[in-house]
Structures are given as C-alpha cells and as structure tokens.
Length: 345
Image (cartoon, rainbow, N blue to C red):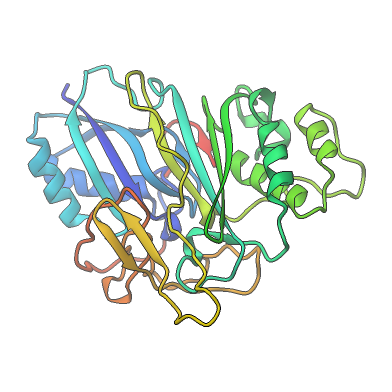
C-alpha cells in the first residue's frame, strides 16, 4: 500500500479543526476531498494530532495511504489547485509503508501570540490582551511547566484521555515588537491544554494570580474558592499555531520568532502597514479587530483575511512565516475534523 508523508499549512479560522466531521467543515475533510478527486480513493488520512476549531498550523504532518502509486509533485500541484486558499499542501513525499504521523512523532511544538496593542491587521492571529503584562512574571510562571506534570486541570474532559500526564520538553517566552510569544514543546498535548495554560499565565502576568498559586496548580492542588480557574481563563484560538511536529532525525526548532509580526510606528512617523514575513517575502495584511480582549478574534469575521491569503483573495491577508505564495481566490463553501488521534491546543 503506497504511503506518503504530507505537510500542510492552514489558517484555522473558518474550520472546526482538523478532524473530519459529518456536519462541519474541517481541514481534514477539505484535504480528503481534494486528494480523492486527484489521486483516487483515500484509504487512510491521519494527522499528527487534532487541532481545535480556529487553531492554525504552520506545518501539520499527516500520513496518506492510497490504493495506487502517484506522482507526488503532480498530485500536490493539482490538490493545491482544488483546495481553498487557506489550506496549502507544502510537501507530499513517499514514506515508509508503516509511517504513522501521530505514533512516530517525537515532539510537537505550539506557539501562542499575545498582542500588547490593538492591531488592525493581525487580529485573526493574536490575542490582544488589554491589561499590562509583566513579561518576567509571565516567563517565571511559564518555565514551571517544564518536566512531567498532570495537566488534568488544564484540559477539557480529562476523563476522556487515557492519561493526563504530559512531559513538557521546553517552555519559552519571547518578545517581538508588540507581541509576547509563548512556545511549548511536549511529547503530546491534551484537548485545550495550551490555551488554558496561556490564559492562566496571562492572569499571572497581569498580576491577577499570584505565581505561587500557579505553581500549586501545576503541582496538582486546587485553587481557593472564588479564585476562578483555567476553564474560565481559556485563551481564544486565534493566537495559537501548531508550529512543528518533530520526528527522529529532524532538524531542531528555529529560534522563537513572531509568526505575524506586530510593530509600532515611532511617534510622529507615518503609519506603517504591519507586515508578515515568510520564505516567499512579505506583504501587508489587512484584517479586522474587536475591542474585547477575550473575543475569539476571528469569530464573526467574514471569510477572508488569513495568514497566507486565506479565503477571499480580493480582501488581502496577513501571512505567517513558513508559508508559500498564495493562489488566486477560488471561492469558499459554507461553514467550517479531528482524525483518530489526540485533540490538542
């Protein structure tokens, strides 16, 4: 059975995650439809992990098993012509027959982008936090995550997971312009785990949650009554990106950097368009902004603005690093999967 390794980037704004669903538009569903039209019956299509509704990916990895052999380059080109412009197949290569995107993965890396100012261009890809953030408090709290911990308090439906213990390999905090960047690298992730951790450390960074209480939560203790909790503090999906999925022999992660940079023009200078960098260059990126710092960012936004010129080519879009040149607008069907595997983010 011919097996292929697929690397996909997507803006998750318009989709109900990766996992294919019968009555919802998903990234996996769109990819399967396009592959079936070009390559024939798809026997198995499985990702390294499920991304939630609204979460983006710079390099999601999937395995693809087909009934016949194909020319990967030609199929990739034809599939990209059929896909909506907010989904792009970056690579399609022959893989060992037993390759499994989820089981063979060693580490997964997520990056979350917090914006310290309102941005007209990058809103679909950040969470604008209005409260002042003490980055050193935030960094101190984030560093507590390294090691093996039980994250039952930081995930949705913990009883649905075989285990809620996760080994966190790295936890990094960086600053880039008006963005605060949070990177988390781990063996795997639980459903909504990253977003709840981000929301909780924002409480620490804003001074509303003492760092020692966050440490107690990581150690497994309950918060005092009336304090709130991770579920209430869940960060919106707009700022979250699946950055990389690492396998044995893969090169290490690049230094932490903004995916959709947000910069501030010096006082008295002409207003500059926010630009987003990619291997293919940079371009200004119009978007839309709400004033509520906990709005979902992309919720209610007309299908259009996206990191790499997602649906709606005529509207323009921001574009994250690691992208490829956008295609022309192909239109987009109605509303927005998760293959067998872990839900994360």
